[in-house]
Length: 537
Image (tube, rainbow, N blue to C red; front, top):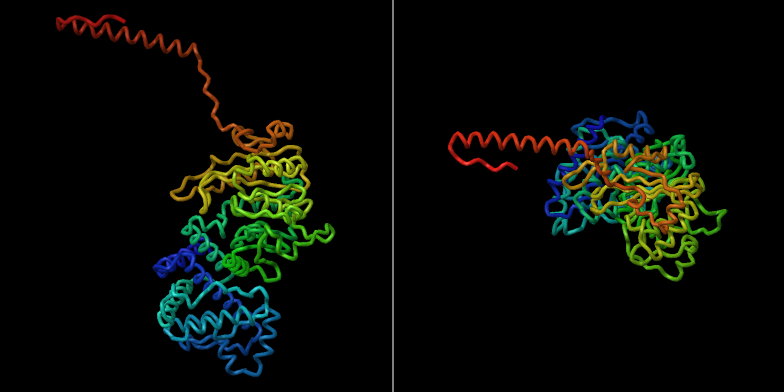
């Protein structure tokens, strides 16, 4: 399938969403829409594997029967079902009963069956609780099929679901159903819903253009970026992963065999579920990722709670787009937390540096961390200045990148990317001022491919360019009290044009001569008319 077809599938589904959600909030409808798309993916993958496993016993049936072949096999081979499902758990890590598979659900919707809603409820619970893989636990917990937003009574809700599912089934019938295609459609829909969610979108979505910058940076060799991409990253971490798009972008940069395992953490339960679905829809096996539902600031993930350096887990790449200037509660206990005690705590008005220190603590010695933060972290004083100063003195801040304003759905302010390393070679900080390189849009500004390439190329080869990038020695940063405000180091003012005084004088002399000639000619006309002339200048 071409890229155009993939985009068309996304647009088809988005049009269905717009037509059907009615008065329902876009965020609520998003969860239904994406869950049904995910069920389609699980079902298709399951049916393909079942066909291979059953071989000749998997009997194709006439299209007009409107049943799936697996349901026929279940009816004819009831004694063999336990062995078959055991094998499918081993192969697929999950099981779906024929009556809960997408085509069965779509047929109930098409024929307006009254049991659609109850069947869906049973199906979601079965996938969550009986499918074997812990990846599915609570996966549909935020999908409330009894919600009055769908309708005031069972019959109305059932009818609404029949319409939604039938339209989705018709919309995607003409498209391929492999994981890349459905995964891209899922990602497109997340982006479209984010665009309509305004500030709330910052909770779950990093625009792809910005994800690409971070991903391309952390996949380059940490010690010698100019040598190109690493062949493999064993562990990649995003501690505020949202819907997982940033982690998937890192995977895309190196290919599926270039990443050992993906780790993510997300506090919002709905977004946590979106991230798990997003991973699976992009063909990431449940053994290849681990997403934790919890609070990164409190570090409540047992896997990360180990303080012993010899046992501590570290990551080859850390990426993040945490909530900007998030208000938090720095407690006495957190002062002694192994992530913060060498630096001090970020102020309660802005947890930006607490998020940064959390991710940085788990960065491997030769790894790279790229994090999106508001510009305030570059220059604010107090506790933040203390943290920033220590990171600089320790040689941990490698690059500061200033981005254009209005790139995000959640805020119009310009933001920065900080690149950090435990062991960096250059004894300077690279500043990149990319704030003026973008395409202006009606709602959001856009970074064009060439803008992204310029940023990454400048980072990779540590290039210097007037009004764009500069390598600043630590002595100069120290003289500026460890303030990292980009405008202190890169002037964006255009140089004044040099004025050639001799040339200006010549022009003035020429102008004066023209004035004298014009007055004399004018007076000649007045004299012919018998009128007094104009005095000469």
